[in-house]
Image 1: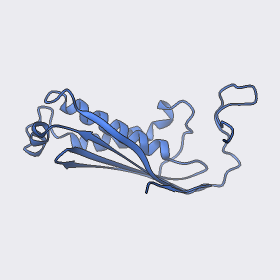
Image 2 (image 1 turned 90 degrees about the horizontal axis):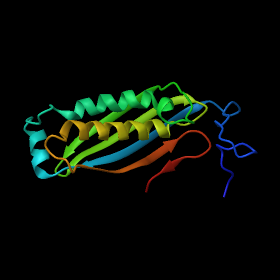
Image 3 (image 1 turned 30 degrees about the vertical axis):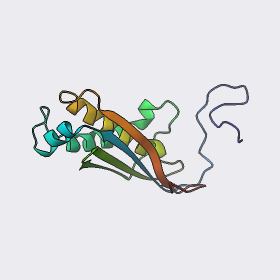
Image 4 (image 1 turned 90 degrees about the vertical axis):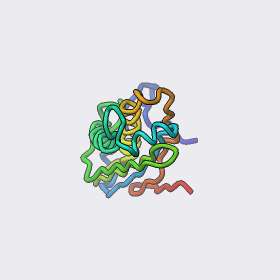
Length: 155
């Protein structure tokens, strides 16, 4: 197992020094699900959800969250994002979320993509909780990353 990168030689927490890393284009995609019952899905399809249509609000919330990831996750680097895109697709089981983040930097954007999906899912929950209290947020995960030392794709 490799050394833990967020600890110094004395065991104290540190931010990783990325100054020696090459600046490359880095891309990450994350996904998640918001599982709902048929009544809630029907309310969204018929535009009768009491708080309105959550899909576009969730997309905006995800984009805003990605831009603030370093404020939410203590040891994340503040990076300039070139692109953040969040999709929210209504299905028979609820809403499928995908977030893509791209930067040209010395560190990756995995946390930004994961934060975007997470906050988008929480926004959907908030906007639909009047119809259904037991909504399930699940399967939030990194789907792929590219750029930097290693690439990754869920198979």
